[in-house]
Image: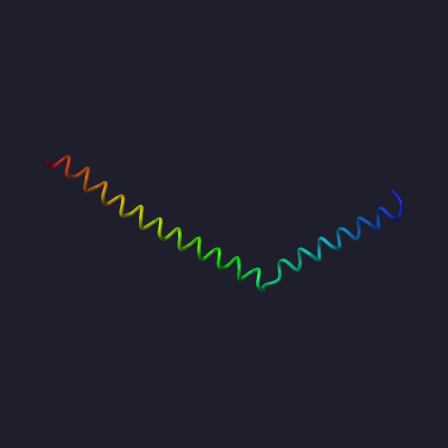
Length: 68
């Protein structure tokens, strides 16, 4: 392994570390992730309510069949 290979590996590692550090800083990118998380939570809540409604309907349908 010669000096130029070692220098190239060092440069690539340094650039990768700096890119990872820049990506981990709080800021615009973090806010975008927060928006995605909030949208996902809203979707989970909506789907949860839908499942509850369907469970009630199923219980009513099955209950009517047994009673009548």
